Length: 292
Image: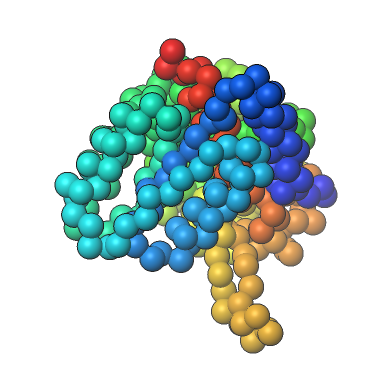
């Protein structure tokens, strides 16, 4: 069994990005600029945005965060989106989810200029992804593809089972793994909470990607020997330890890991790659790689 070290790979890629940024600055040009809109006090959202700011600083990007209280109106938020759409100094930006209940998230995301939608959530970018056209890839699936590539994990002709059908992870992951590409060229089965005989399907997987959002859902008897297991979940579970909690994923790691050829730990597996993918999307926006 080999651990897939997302933290290590993430640091390698950030170093590569930093070298590119340094060359841009040395040439007298401005570095890429990534902005974010953060509404409210959601702890997970605040943590993610803080990580984004640290990563931007580490690679030399310009980073800005537009922070608003929960009572911001939908119109006011749309005005902020319009402002960033029209700001030539901002290459890409994200609207951190979730948004307060009185705001239509779909309406806000659809207001973003697809050329600046570095989260890859705009319908235009989702459509381009589905058609196999160049697009901004959602950060977590893109990060998983980078891990598979950097670890040289063979995917062609393999059976990939994806647990979870969210628009952020499961669905785009299934599309990427089925693409005629490397990594890719898998036969993909997309499962979810209503899938019957789920364990029988997961036990057929050469590559199992768990993004079902339930702590330690995947047990050892759901995984075949030699499988590659990618754990997307991250859950904070209260316990009697000194910290008062521990972090776990969607996979029961201690029981499943001995059966695997490769497996991602939680934390330190997929998580660090999400921010890295966002940085890479911002570089694509900076270079006008998708929308010239």
